[in-house]
Length: 221
Image 1 (cartoon, rainbow, N blue to C red):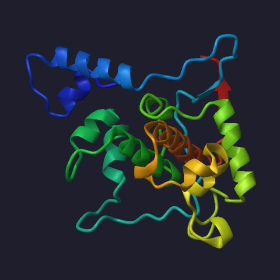
Image 2 (cartoon, rainbow, N blue to C red):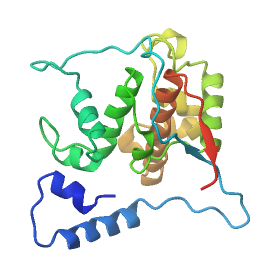
Image 3 (cartoon, one colour):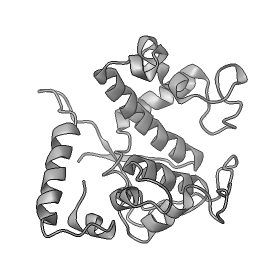
């Protein structure tokens, strides 16, 4: 959620900033509710991260550091550095270093890119924007990797089906179903778009953590 500090950091100046924060928070509560656990069902276990942060012993072998045109940094690096200095993904998204505002989820993706490049990350600060996979969701992703024979740790240029480029949609087909996966985004219903979005987010976490050989731990909330 956005908070007062995030808006101020993004350059918002208003006497009514508290009301603005409340309005935005109410909208998030309404449109991004967490799924309810059915009566009688056991709550899933959430992924936990150490307070000290997580870091790979070395960068992922297929991580390519490519500087942006006209810049001495990679496309993900500015967001990463601002996040590590304590700025929230929301304020970074509202006021990126270049261009128009972006989504907070994009900032999370930039931070995860930094993780695969060997940088240290406080993953606990990211889960408020994109929750990490639960234990059950992690297991489903492991099963999808085995079923599709698409390794998330190998060269993405050749680790897809029949040696083609890796495709997140193809990888997720065993989870979301072929009927949903085969549709182009405009053809999907709102529920199908929500389903795909959720699993794309889970897969981004899964790829990043698998690529740094991170062994997840899970706990009840």
